[in-house]
Image 1: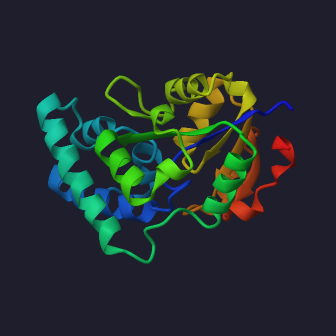
Image 2: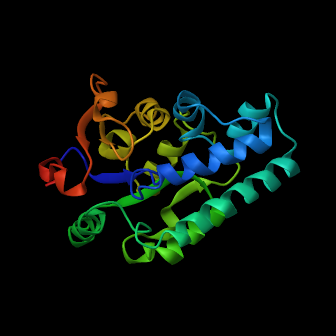
Length: 224
């Protein structure tokens, strides 16, 4: 079998929360620069990026580390409360749990590669019971040393955690910056998860082999 492992992005991929991040950053951008981010800015400069990258873009300069940390914590605290307040939708993506059960039953290596910071990762592990499906020590996140997407580093690191080469992994992504990151890492098979974007956005991107909105739509024959 050519493909031996699965790497998931998290925001908008395993958890359909892009709208929450969208709303949180749009509101927070008013504090940073007095106006909301446009939809195009959100697509090109927000999704898949580190908080430091986003704040630098919004302010037009590299932020002071301590100020960046303070602003990021304020924004993420707002975001986490939005998740907790939306009890109906605070769950994994449609049929993701069934797919994760399948991967565990088949002993197919899998992990998460997210530009989320540790506070959010710990929040997801607790609130969404990620320990049921993941070895949390293999989750790769923004620890301050990994460049934001579209740099390939996070997917290279995730493949290494699985003891696989990037070309042996299938990546599930929703963000264009994340797709570019996976492709730059050497991933040849990418599944675009159209959680918020029109599926047409992903067409004609060569490395995208499947486009799904529900994990039941994934053609598992490539890993069987």
